[in-house]
Amino acid sequence: MMAERTHKQKPATERTDEVVEEAAPARSESGEKLKGELDDLLDEIDEVLESNAEDFVKSYVQKGGQ
Amino acid sequence: MAIPKVCGIETEYGVVVRGGDNNPVSASSMLINAYVNATSRKIGWDFEDETPANDARGFNLDDVFAPDIETSLVNAVLPNGARYYVDHAHPEISNPETTTAAEAVLWDRAADEIVRASMTYAREVMHDGAEIVIYKNNSDGKGNSYGCHENYLVSRDTPFGRIVAQITPHFVTRQIYCGAGKVGCEQPGREPGEVAFQLSQRADFFEEEVGLETTLKRPIVNTRDEPHCDPQKYRRLHVIVGDANMSEVATYLKVGTTSIMLAMIEDNELGDEWLLASPVSAIRQVSHDPTLQRTILLRDGRRVTALEIQFGLLERARKYEQTHGLEVVGDEVGRDVLVRWEQVLTGLERDPDSTANWVDWVAKRRLVDGFAARHDLQPGSAKLKAIDLQYHDMRPDRCLALRAGLATMVDPADAVAAMTEPPTTTRAYFRGRCLQKFPGEVVAANWDSLVFDIGRDPLRRVPMMEPLRGTAQHVANLIDQSATAAELLERLGA
Image 1 (cartoon, each protein chain N blue to C red):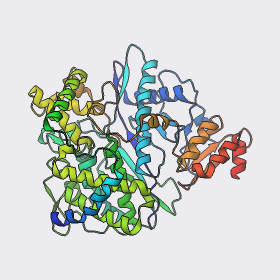
Image 2: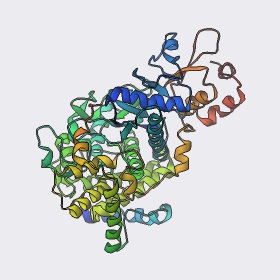
Image 3: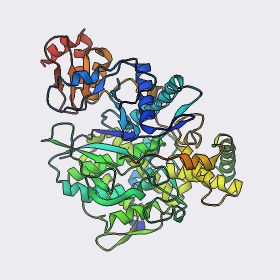
Image 4: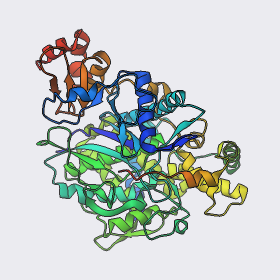
């Protein structure tokens, strides 16, 4: 099943080069760079995350909708 | 035969008042009134479908300068062709009709900006630093859900049973790239902690395969038959099974892949290869499995993963493109959707984390897991649920999704323009332009009609039963050349 699928996708991969301009989800960065990014992100979350998480989560109650 | 996939997204937002009375209905009304009062004359939504309603009149002449706290239910039409109103106890924006996934994403982003502006305007009329905070999510983590619905125009000729059977495998499995992610579990009968993290906000709430309900016993395929256009020719497939996405690419893929699937079903080119033995348990199982490794039982006895089904649907879509083209979803957009669809599946297959810039649940999980590791938190910690909720906080200074490194497709300036400009490709253009140019004479609007008061005679209703008429190409000149609504109606022969 997997082999057959890979085979059939070949033409698609060729077309990819023509159409896509922006970064595909595949990341080529090194693991270390990714980790650095995540560290910066977590620093930011430390700053902006609701200070009293327990109260915030408890009081976040919505009425059911559609 | 497949017909153009006119489409649109409607989002019910979570709403919280901080530092004030936390009544969601009055808060939603206040939020919308604050926006409408600050930006335009209020045009009411018309609930009448066919009758030239004199009673529409009183309904629509609300005082422009509503009191600060307005508790009556609000129902406004915006100059971009959207409807902005209170639904149940949530503010909701129903985006204008569009013709491609790219347009749907643009007006979804415009809705984000409308909500952000609304919060700012509401803060100005509230006192003592109270504020209304909006969350673009679908669950409160306590068993209450609210929807992000998609709508697609489908041909009345297509047997509904075929749509139900053949679209279900897509609805059950597309969450692997359009799930918005959730900390915990809300499936009835299970403990919140039984699932640490799942792909979808909504999957826990689906209990039926097909049905009319939207608030209880929600079905994977909703049967609401309210086309808002010519019912002899069209259906509006009302899709309630999706999540609200913060990722633009996820919204694009959600609408783009579903549009292609529906065109294929209309042309009877999708087939029954992937029919599921038990869709309701499958949709939860897929959502509860971030490894993407568990298999689903098909009706023909095979067991396959959600990824295998998605690869199978993609392969059929590629064949369809070869034999039928993708004009009904927009050729260029359709081809780009196929490319990105393959990229996201390939990325998910190799390493889900590689899709963190496209896929909301992956981006969110990265934050949750990273934060847990840094602070040595156990699953079940309130801080992790707080990250989940705050991912969807629409305040730019608080929103975690905006910080998560998601790729964008829409130029921010275009999103701002789309707050007040309608799509040019559907009847939303006529609706939006008339509201812009003749705000004093349009007294009510609906998806399929506009009601004018030109100062004499009864109110005049202009029906818009064809979603693809009233486009810029059809009516831009007419509107430009008409100094008054009366002139426009004359030119239209209405």
